Length: 300
Image (cartoon, one colour):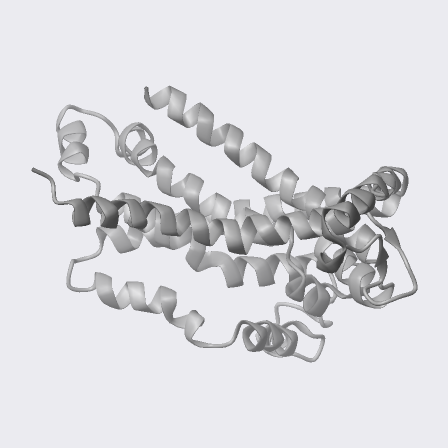
C-alpha cells in the first residue's frame, strides 16, 4: 500500500515549480500587460487607470473598462519599433549562427577528448561566468577601440596600416554576443555529444562510409537536440539584449532592448514600454511553444 505521506510529497514536488512560475512569471506578466493597456499620465505611477485594492471589485471593473489597445496600435504605426524588432531579430539570428559555428567544434573536441581532460575543458568553458558580465563587456571596449589592444596587435604585425573602426558598430555587437553567450551553446551540444556511442562511427567507417558522411549521418543527428537547446539559449536573451549593444554598439545600433530602456527610463512612457515588452515576449514564446508541440507530435 502506498504511503500517504509519499503521495503528498510527490504532489508537492510537482506543484511547487508551477507555483513558483505562477508567482514570479504569470503575475508580473499580467501586471505588465495591464500597464500596456493603460494610458501615460503625469503622476506616480506614470499611467492610468491604476487599481487600488481599497476600491474593491467595483474599482477593478471600472479600471478594466478604461483599458485600451492604443499603445499596440501605436507600435505598428511607428517605424522605429518595427525596425527595432527586425534589427534585433537579424542581430540575434546572425549572432546565434556565429556562436553555433564556433561552439560546435569546441563541444565536439571536448566530447572526443580523453575522459581525464574533459573536466578541465569544461571548467575553462564555465570560467568566464566567475567574472561579472558587465566587466567582461567593458573589457571588449579596451580591446576593440581604435587605440585598443586588437588594433595595436594588427598594426604591430603589419596586417593593417590604419586602425580598424570596430567599436560602435554591429560587428562589435556580434563579437560581444558571441563571446558572452558561447558557453550557452557549447554546454548543451557537449552534453548531447558526450552521450553518443562512438562505436557507431567506427561501425560506419568499417562499412566503408567516408568520415564526412559518417559525421552528417550519425554525429550531427544525435547532436540536434543539443544544437536546438543551444540556439534557443543564445537567441532568446540576444533578442532582448541591452548591455552589449549599449556599450559596444553605440547610438547607431538599433535593438529592442535599448528601445525598451529609452521608453521606460528616459521618456517615462511605461504603457508603451510595457507593450514593447509584451510583444517581445509573445514573439519569443509562441514560436517556441509551436516548435515544442511539433516535436512532441513527431516523437509519438
